[in-house]
Length: 386
Image 1 (cartoon, rainbow, N blue to C red):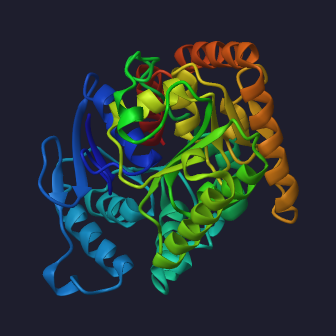
Image 2: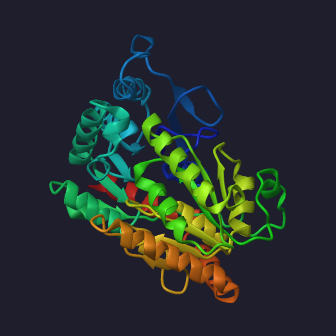
């Protein structure tokens, strides 16, 4: 079987959960089948890369994306099945499937109707991305949802999709890489004391990740709890300024040594150090199909406090972490809940340790990439047989 994987992200240009998913899935699939990867951007090993046509260099990013998709479809000769990831590659997968007469499979990492704030970033391009996604889902031979919650979202947003064509295959975790480590040099290099309890956030600056909620919650953290925010790549300059203003206000009220904002993108070994040493990892997302960051923290034996949205409750289960209810109509209650649970975990290291150990056991037992690759192959076989 010749598999074509179409993706915006490919190492070293990984900036979100979809990219992590593709990198690890392909690594396992290549042990089982022939895989051709097509990605956006500059040439790099392991994939055929495509840049937008030069005539679209100054166009809206959504139009640049469509240009790349056309180039991908044009390079799809010889594929037996096409598998696209995120709206960025959905049109390329759809067209390649039509061109070659082969099934097109989509992995649903997120859905445009659930991310209206993307209009801040894309402008009218958001209407284009929404159209692309809707059209691709309508025609796809199969849809892989990364959680049961994500499957519900797919069927709610796109009721024309046959539920029998939607398969749940979770995101995975490389528990050989994400594990507790003894090093602390990355922390000290960024002004974080490994001996002081800190709550950790890791993620992009986008409305989806709920960072402003966490920054308001931190106003209620116990004085001894430090907040470390590893966050970069704001969706818009306006959102970047909003977060910067919140961080500055929080540092003014709590002290600059109590709020550390790391704006550069850390290497993954550095992030593992932060996961390992954090007293608690906080995921305040307002929309999250699954949330790989929670698995990464759990695999590093760190207690997790997370919102109860999307697929997060399928990962952070009782005994492996703590969930806080998110109600968009009552953000103050959500922020107070985050603060209360962070304070509770930080004040009880023994219980935090138990949560962390249980979280690692769950990550190892239920989220291996080898098992996820085999489940994905099963979806391919079903799509080819239909």
